Image (cartoon, rainbow over all chains, first blue to last red; front, side):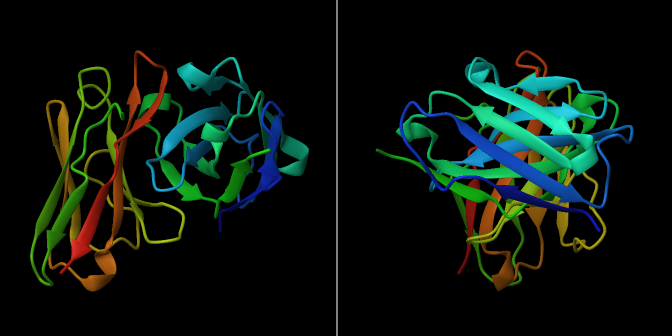
Length: 123
Length: 110
């Protein structure tokens, strides 16, 4: 059974750096074709993909946020970490981690999701 | 504004068939598989359809997906009250080298 769980601060101040951790079970990121993504959803708005890291440590980022995002993995702990710098109130959202699988990025899909964690950016 | 375009709302009565459209371009839907996600109120999204028209195990066959050119569609037949949710389409975008989602469609069961 695949499970993912997000953890991190519920409140951050503007200009601070956000660090979120996705802890997962039921698969290993050292196994070929496994990937973990971060996706966010502002209150009342649509889903927005942020970043992905795969078993081979390849990474892709949302173009508009590339300079602010860093994704990394700790295979021994079954964790993926996302950092986002220079937080702004518009970054207030529920942040989800989700698994995808497959060799070809374009052919993947998000087959398992965490419950999400709400991050509010406010002074 | 989302790269993939969905109608903001859709509705139907129990037992009816409804369809939700998702329009994109050659760099996303036109060249890559589409997936669909159901988000019940207050919960995380759930995979409903992948590779344009495939259902994961456990998803009722009332849900079906199709694609033609740069547009995709999710159909729900035999509408039930528990289908009331937000529905999102998604596809890889070759120019952006990343995933794009539709703006979401809120389905109301009257």
